Image 1 (cartoon, rainbow, N blue to C red):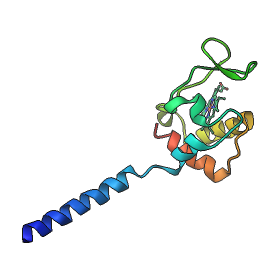
Image 2 (image 1 turned 30 degrees about the horizontal axis):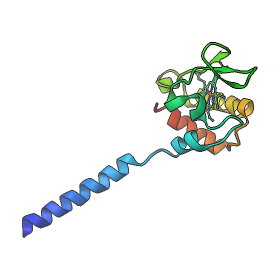
Image 3 (image 1 turned 90 degrees about the vertical axis):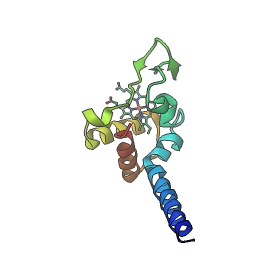
Image 4 (image 1 turned 120 degrees about the vertical axis):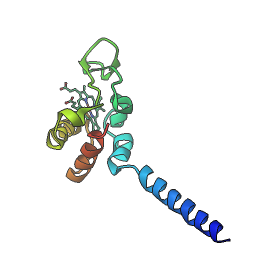
Length: 114
Ligand code: HEC
């Protein structure tokens, strides 16, 4: 009986830790759901990578025309949170996102983990 009790505590503890570990950064949600003129960040930076190029003329994703959409993977190792925040502020203006300063910081913190 006593062993059963210990086992129960052990399992509950595991479940608790797993739930905590899986909790996503608030910025991830914003990355996936915040809406700009063309959709979320994920539309162009697909899964944090790149969906191709952004054609400014036709306002669409293209294979060979327009500005390369950079992948955001590993950006946290190359750039500081402040630099990433500045890029996101630029995204906000260019692609019409409605984001507060706090949300920009949250997204930057998430993007830095990609
Ligand atoms: C319509 C397509 C599009 C959308 C939507 C978009 N981006 Fe971008 N992003 C780009 C392009 C294109 C560039 C490259 C800009 C340049 O070269 O000046 C870029 C650059 C960046 C950079 C700089 C990368 C680097 O290597 O320095 C970051 C960070 C970034 N985007 C994050 C975001 C976030 C966060 C969002 C959502 C709020 C977002 N982007 C939404 C197309 C997009």
